[in-house]
Image (cartoon, rainbow, N blue to C red; front, side, top):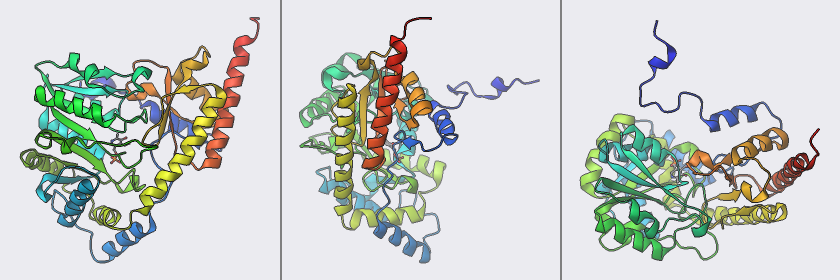
Amino acid sequence: MTSKTHRLASRVKLADAHLITKMLDIANGLDDVIKLGRGDPDLDTPAHVVRAAQEALAKGATHYTHPMGIVELRRAIADSIRAEGGADYAEDEIIVTPGGQQAMFIIALTLLDPGDEIIVPCPGYNPYQQAAELSDAKVVKIPMGMETNFTLTAEMIAPHITDKSRILVLINPNNPTGTVTPPDEVRKIAELAAKHDLIVISDEIYARIVFGNQKIQPVAALPGMKERTITLSGVSKAYAMTGWRLGWIAGPKELMVPMTEINHAFAISTAAVSQHAALAALTGPQDCVEEMRQEYASRRRVIMAGLDAIGMAYAEPQGSFYVYADVSSLKLGITASEFCQRLLAEGQVMIYPGTIYGDHTDDFVRMSMTQPVPRIEEAMKRMAKVVATIRAERHQPAQ
Ligand SMILES: Cc1ncc(COP(=O)(O)O)c(C=O)c1O
């Protein structure tokens, strides 16, 4: 008889449910959980976008589209990239995908041979790693820490480049750390990539959510970089449209042609209705993006104040909607993973450990600003209480 484990292909690394799935299952059995785990905004997709999608459906946007996406949307994406200081893209240099997430797999399958090396920031958004592993490529992780506020630098990357290096991933602002690689450093990283003939995947999906005077330098707009950069983005974060599943990649045409074939093999095309929604998002009024950014800025202040009150250190949150906080700074004698489980079970607050994002320490947690201010205030109170309980346990004399 075939045993269950033999049914799985050898490439499957995780036969059990992912920690995120497990935590969501635990949360489902609890009352009144404040969910600061997933990177899914609680904010609604702007009403004019929903209306445009309804109208598109009524007019028959119920079919497959061109595998690269409807041309009006590709033009709108090109305009939006240009408006944000990015490179000039033609409509045949852009592919619309069912979320940026799927794009990562399209890129990996198109560009990576077994044994090729892909350099990823660590901690960093983990599907890049999963996509590379599916392609039998070698993942080279660049560990980041508080010394650089968890941002990648050219100096950190340089020693890891070998003759097998093919792709460098830059996520700016970064998930899970909520930190920004400054424009000067992006320039140095781009020069390094050019010197070693690397392709850069520049994930700019959070680029419109930055705080203070932070600026995002689009990699492809730097001299000589357009031909070696694949810009990855989408509407999920800036327009609160995660459930519409719509992202894109922009890059050199000779790479977009084979990537279109893989996109077609996976999905045929991105859902027509979602493409019309994204078109309305990109071409309609943009105040909604700024309003949401300001809302995240308020939430960010509340989280920072709460962490300061607890005495928990964190990386300066400069962009995206995450705060990366250091559980080890509390000296509770437990790991970040254990802390997340206790916080969920005893405080009904869900946050994720940094290990999910490949953090080499189990010291940090990611907190998403995906609840309104009063709920975040309540979450910080609950967190303070759980911390106090753990502290009290530690100080109890042994029985
Ligand atoms: C850095 C980063 N890139 C890309 C994505 C993919 O987003 P989507 O598939 O919703 O476009 C995410 C989602 O959380 C992300 O954090």
